Length: 383
Image (cartoon, rainbow, N blue to C red):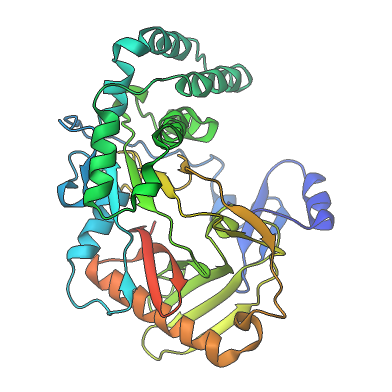
């Protein structure tokens, strides 16, 4: 997914009609031309979406579990990939992982089955039957379904399990003082099953909505000074010896949320250690933590699958929203201090190689930098 913030380029794009070819050059620029070229021109048919099969699951007995209880039967790739890294040996000492708990598969269904939610659940079920395949009509119905999820009430036992699991994980008590705020975020994640992109993506891949379970990974938000994404095989050049990455000031929402401007873009050679900065950052705003808070990340059984990442289809929601502030690159060493910048990138090179080795394959890694430590908050097989 590419986002265009240049009005001139976007104007050219809107004037094109019919088939177009989009490519990404070595500098990371998206180039769009009229007509088809290469392999696309050799085929008169558009490629079909891959058919995805989701395995049958047994809902967990608990409504909230600690990281020691994470398994592939009750949670998705986000939770289990992080747990695999926690157990890995030979990782650098500066590599850290945020403490985590999770609401496993089946918790959403237990809440919906609660006596207090009888009418809301009936309304949700009735709305799903109105989905007809007409995108314009379905978008209105999907919005109603998501709104209905916001009306769900907490069931007996959930608050106690959530607060207890968070205490076991070492979260400070203040993070769960406002349980209603936490539950509101959980409901947003559950409701994102019925987001427009998520729903239409499932339809394109012939996924039965009833087979999609929503888990929720709960983490304390790390107060990031910098956030990054690494692809441990360069997706532009195709080189297995290169790591391609991007880095922004502040939290990762400025990067994955497509805020206007460019991230710091770089390529690192795994064998030689050479680092090439291809673009310097130009994002005018960064996202920063206002207060200590929790983030509730989607962790469905329809993400991080072989051949289908599903990245970005389902929501991640902070209990307390972060704040957006201007970034002054004149005051930030990542722009003008080459030694400082390379020290960070050297650590990211080490992290990329270590995580790829521990997970036995190319990875898409999301994380952040805090002083001398590097946190990995998510990793998935690179698709």
